[in-house]
Image 1 (cartoon, one colour):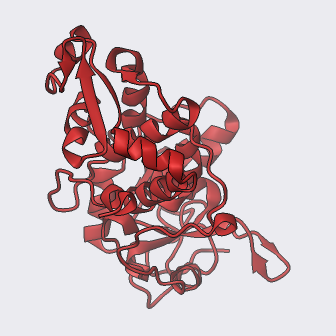
Image 2 (spheres, rainbow, N blue to C red):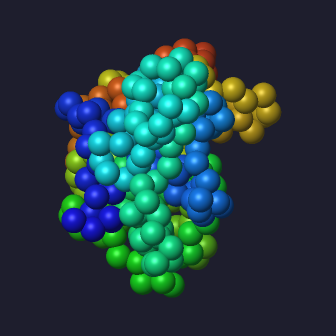
Length: 314
């Protein structure tokens, strides 16, 4: 098995589509640090705060600890841990990792392969990103872990893909929602070409989400990013959820985010099925952060936007 295949097949705890991106996040962080210092080790007590921040921002909604991937990634053959006493991890206890001086880094064979093949780092990173995270988060995730990747098309990177995405999904979803953001109604164009509108997977493609309209929403670029970050969601009544954890004091934050709470979705058009309950429930449990904000008086009546399957007032 080559290194890219090994990265794509990290052993993770799984159950009914539950997200567990702990190991991929640590692996990406280690690649970023390797790019900065190929010989440096990561002392747990020094990187714990960074790893906790990554898990809080890109991990599952419930609180978790970086101690687990720091210890368990060893079993995948890409990571090693040493303490002040010698080789081997002291376990998953946070106190044990801190007090033993535990440090981790990529295994010698992988470090040697990365030195021999400079393009390997990019292929590894893209495999981890494509397998575990939606495309809308790839660029900022690289920035968060300190990775600098050249565009894949310029370097001919090929990564492991479990299946080919359906390129028709974007057009099908945008048509179903009549080229309007389902959350805010934005419908900008340059001439006849829509700009700033994207087809968002509700259940992420990386977690078995199908490329069909019942798993899609037409969203503007801002709301697509906030949807994938767990700031926004969709409830059982096809209304917009806004996380209580979101904080924004500007008029822009209020108008574009907090005021959406409780607002009915814009679309889809008559005859098109709305987002399937199974995909909506997956997003709520695996991506959406915290409890939802209560609907404002202006949106609770549902008079400002269309409900699923009806045509919104223009």
